[in-house]
Image (spheres, rainbow, N blue to C red):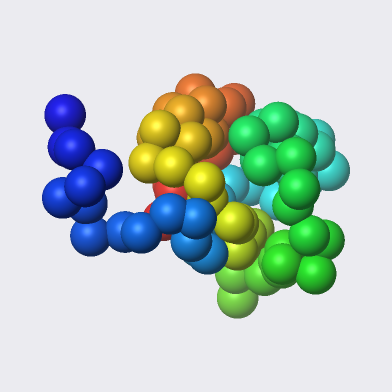
Length: 89
């Protein structure tokens, strides 16, 4: 395990996360619920969406205020387990 004192990130910090999946209201709602559970202070202005050129994929980008490495790891773990998530960047 990485010691936070040797981490490249200094917390709290702004941290970008992009989630990619098939476009649907259900996908959007599931992803957003997970992010808000881990980042209850999420600012709606820090969320953006983009459809792929042929509208086959939806990417949802979040700029979160991360308080710890553990928070980021827990968020990524839950997003990976989320039905419909194809990629997390």
